[in-house]
Image (tube, rainbow, N blue to C red; front, side, top):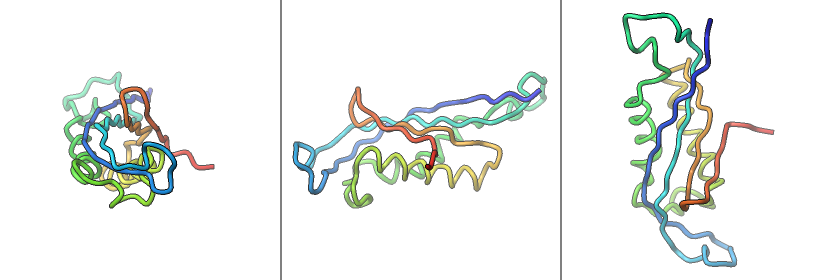
Length: 134
C-alpha cells in the first residue's frame, strides 16, 4: 500500500528591499534575514523493505538542498530584491520562488510533488504558497 510522506528542509538568506509606492517604514530600503521552509512529498510504499535507501526516501535532503540553493538562496542572498521582483512583498516572492523550485523538481523528479514554500521576513511573520490557483 502506498503512503504519501512529506519532508521539509529549512534555508536562510540575507537580502534587502523596499516597497515602491508604499506609505510606511517599508518604503525605505531595509534588510531581512529571510528564512524559508520547503516541503515536498511523494507516494511510495514505504512499508516494503528495500536494498536501496533511495527507495525509502521522498527525496534525498542533499538533493533538495542543491535545488533550493540553486533556484533561490544563491540567486537572492545578499542582493537587492527590487532588482528581481517588480514588487518584492513576501507574498509575491514566495509565489515566484515556489514556481522556480517546482519547475526544477518537475524536470528532475516527476514523482516528487512540491507541497508548500514558506518565506519568513521576520521571526513572527511569513507568507506561504501551496501552488493553489483560483
